Image (cartoon, rainbow over all chains, first blue to last red):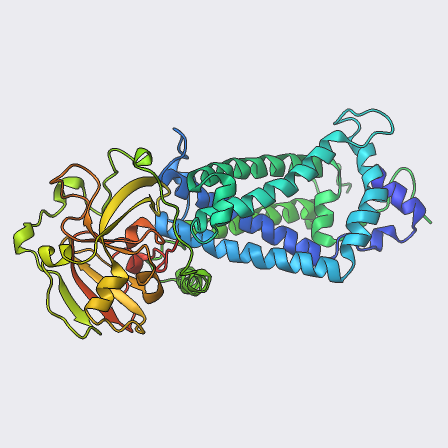
Length: 222
Length: 254
């Protein structure tokens, strides 16, 4: 049994039944994970059509059949991600989820528990915030912002010319988009590794609840 | 008899239930993955007409409408200086460079069709007699590369007005000497930088960039800029185009 489960169960006897990840969070999380994965798969074929750098992706990992298929696939997934993002932001604000979970719950309860879990993995001094997490979750917000705006610039360098001016032009926006995508892929790897290292995290993103089984050796909470 | 007896072990299905569940789960995941892979690999070629293809075509038509709504007639493409021009300007077509048509200028006639009041064909010297302008703009290909070139000729809006084209019609279509075709929306055709091009990048006498007539549209991707144009027509039915009919987005604005 994991430490975070025990701590939560001590403070709240019904912790194992409590929904810690609301349905909309789980749906939008997996939907964006799916859409982004597929979008990056398609994106590699688009990159290959005119590589920015002397490097190409092997053709067998670039689905879409041909360039037009990959482009159509990417634009379809852009709409999926946009709707997903709007639902997540609007529902999150309206339902009070951001205040409850992202600010209060996560910052105070989960954050401390995750820190305990990560102690053997990531070294940090006592009383400090975990620097890896802090950098990681701040960075991904900026990566997503860069991806959206560099993507809009590549799509409409004339209509969104103030954006194009900001990035230094269409070709520069392409490079920013390329590196931001690499950044997002790297974030996903680290994010997944941490999630897999902390038992029950991935399961809870499906069920919404913490692990159902009571601790075996320490004894089930009364 | 105890289950521990190695000579006659009592095998119960119950003992293996967890393993069976694990195998079933693994199979389910495997099938799920291959289903996903199938839709990714064969499902979005835009050529086999399956459900995914239909969805992607519908999304592309929706993207046309969004782009038409975003299009701002007053937004001009950035212009560059002579020093920024890409040399040599890249040649790109659906065929290799030696296959590019070579048209004999004095014999050339630009045909007109559709919703145009004066359909008399035009010769190069007549087009040259119209007010001339030029631009140095960035050509962006759907493949992702870009190049800066200089094009000269007649503002397309001026030409459309001169021939009495119905400017309230929806589309302008182009037919080309290399069997290429494309079409654009009327607002893009009337954009101040859309140019009926008579002067091309490259050396004097070089014809591969579209001589004698090209339509340069800096607010559209490269493939929407037809070369070797032999006929211009105005219509209310979307004429599609060579690449557009195969799945590239029709509006393809910049």
